[in-house]
Image 1 (cartoon, rainbow, N blue to C red):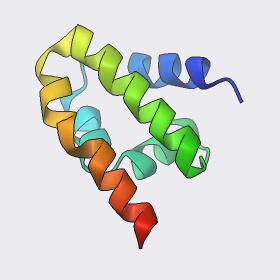
Image 2: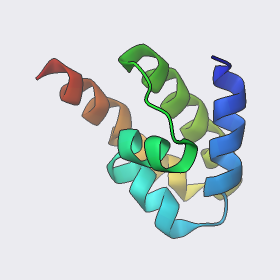
Image 3: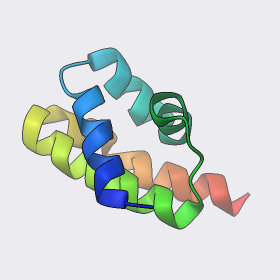
Image 4: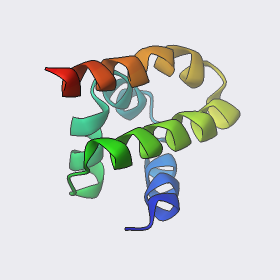
Length: 80
């Protein structure tokens, strides 16, 4: 699976759409599944979220700040 392509696809869909960014921020796993129609394993999900939040931060500025807790939320989901 090409993680960089997934990141690019997600960034393209999220850019400029505050509703989708909010969905991605609150529940990245569900947002990725809805937007791309795929399930990712935890390591792939972590890589995709890092890449998307990094690129969104470059584009939107505040998105990266809002998404600051996403990775810790994801890690907590998989610890249960």
